[in-house]
Amino acid sequence: MTESNTSETPLGLLMRMEQVSRHLGYKLPEKIDIQPTWRGLVFTVDRWRLLMPLEMITDVVDCGPITPVPRTKPWLRGISNVRGTLYSVTDLAGFLGCESGTVESEGKLLVLRDSELRAAFLVKEVYGLKTFDVEQRIDNVTTVDATIRPYVSEGYEEDDQVLPVLDVDRLINTEQFLGIEWVKTG
Image (cartoon, rainbow, N blue to C red):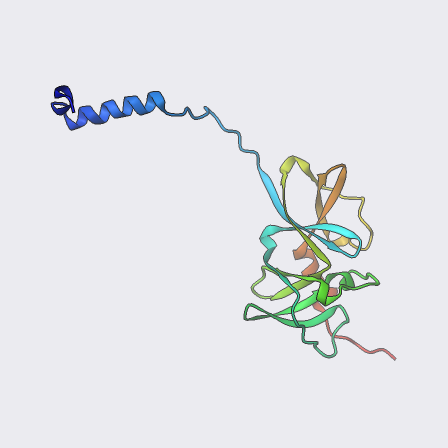
């Protein structure tokens, strides 16, 4: 150290260090525009590519063993143990009236975030998360099949096509979904 450095006060040294760091440091941008976004999970049910809001899902897992529940509708596959908790498993394709349901060994379970219901949807394939700018949102999705239209609340545009968003709250609160008991006629 030189003679001048040893006589410098601690405050003076700190002020000099601040000046050097400001001179050599990176400048931050004046203003950062953060665009609002929406995140969802892309998956397939039968022939449809759909989105589900990320906040509606707690887990995505490979479909494990499902224990059938007697006297229920065919689309209610049964119950499954996911990480120590039992969930009712709905074949989403079957619920929507598709002829070909999802094969358990090939499907994925979308575990829903609903503390009262404890349900999971069995779907054909999961593609992953997708983030959209809110400007890509389409409020009135008219290009979807009549089968799923009652359960679609909105959509997001991607590569000149619209990905419909499955309205999980609307679906799980329908009489059809809640009425799982199989009633024999005739």
